[in-house]
Length: 396
Image (cartoon, rainbow, N blue to C red):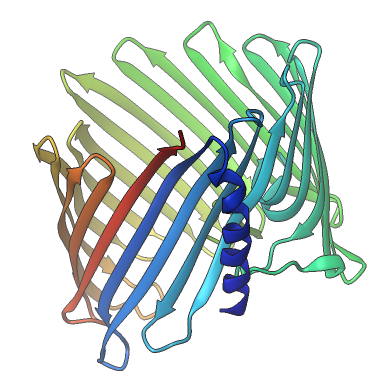
């Protein structure tokens, strides 16, 4: 908690500089309580306080300070902090140069992850050519307010070129070192764009330079025709650790996957059909998904066989505005599936219901009751309560 105090102290020291001049603060403060029964059959309440803020000074219109962090307390455990981003962002008047310094989430070709360091972004040739350079360190795995330092350095570069107004080519390189040894070195190539106004294409190839083999590849085509859309996708991925957002870090197993789908707009409803074939090293899986959606929600039917066992289920996710400032949320799913490891068939049901209420334009109250029933929990009931305060402040 000491490091969290340091963060708050730094922000407190910065605030007086804004108080005596025109400045703005935009973002949100979010308080969350999550109540559930833990594995010891005891009721537990976790508390999360989040702040996602952008500070900007009137005399520095091209510069702003952005921060996003949480302080949390799980049951009787001690307080923790999570700092997802805290950086200073600057752009030149002509937007030719862009610099970002601090903890930032990057997704620029091969440069992926939450990193602590400096990003230089340069636009050339009337924005047809773009160069990005990054240097810094890996952020701590648990997103603590700390810097890993020289034990885990990260460098990367990405070059983007608009071949045509609707076609772009990206080439990128990324290297991570841990304890002076290269732990990750990857190059990536990407091509994306549009042809004939209605055909969109995307090609991505990642190469593992350490292992001298491909790391992953993906190709995707989407075609729009009146009320129809058609999509085809092929992807092949070797194992890796992914950081696809500020909050999630997870492992991906090796797989090859083929997807095909289509949608059709029927009045205000979008009808969809999707087929997914996935080939793992030890097994294969097939999925067929039918969906119907409109502005207030989605209903889906899913059938799966092969990897992870047979699965037949239905799910629905509904958001309906009863009043201009009151929205009701419902989610339910039912699956009958077979576990791959134990080959025991069973049913699983989950349900959640809640509301979102906006008594004032900058305050959102939400509550949700959740329940799931399966072989592990006969009756797992949980409650989620959230207060969201939207900030849009500008000093006189």
